[in-house]
Length: 256
Ligand code: OAD
Image (cartoon, rainbow, N blue to C red; front, side, top):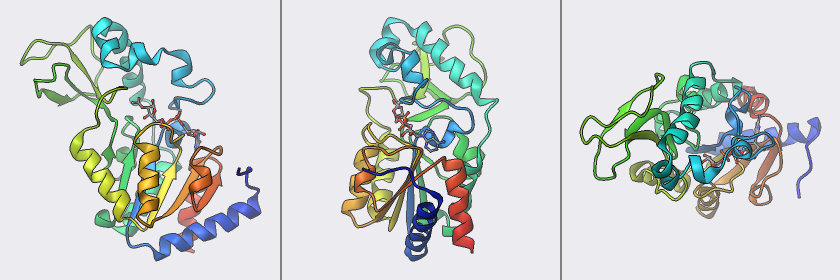
């Protein structure tokens, strides 16, 4: 069991992490909703989080969409509309800075977030394992229609190819992850020397599993989270605090 770190402990943890990163040729990062919390985007499982106010089955499963597509679009349109207002925070920018330091080929950012804030902060080649709120696609599995759309949508949009309802291009419960993205994420976890896990409760597959994979393949694993998580006991360093504060401190430490 980890306890909240005081500033001395944080200094030690930052120094240890900076040491791991200096030794590392390849780095991979896994982020979750916590990294966007300081931008004003709600997390899922924290107090007041999205899953507290909504029935997951109704708004985030293919069955829910089939039953009531309007309800599902209402939920996602509210989240899509928020995208115009939210901005990356210092945590997102610090990760973009790390990518510049290691180079695109040696730094892979895997995110479970669908808000696009890493890209806005300047990170390239982001692996969005849960899809994106800024894309919509056809709900017909046999149809490959998909488009980038981040404007507000009225009513129930229909596919211009097959006339079925369009849906947000996000991954719902019970659905498989986009295969190419998932393969790339697995490879990054296996090949990295340091694996940074930021702002995720790591309870949803494949988050927790990627952490185990990285560990099994020899990476040093570093966690940044406001609170201890299920993963905290198996990582090499666990730093507790807001990612918007800790990640910039880490970059500063690396540069010093
Ligand atoms: P969760 O809501 O499960 O977890 C958010 C984590 O962020 C928690 O561990 C918090 O302690 C931490 N946190 C909150 N604020 C933070 C901050 N300022 N700095 C650092 N950490 C902070 O969100 P995810 O782990 O992203 O999937 O959830 C994973 C997936 O489950 C989501 O992608 C979503 C959800 O159901 C789908 O919608 C398919």
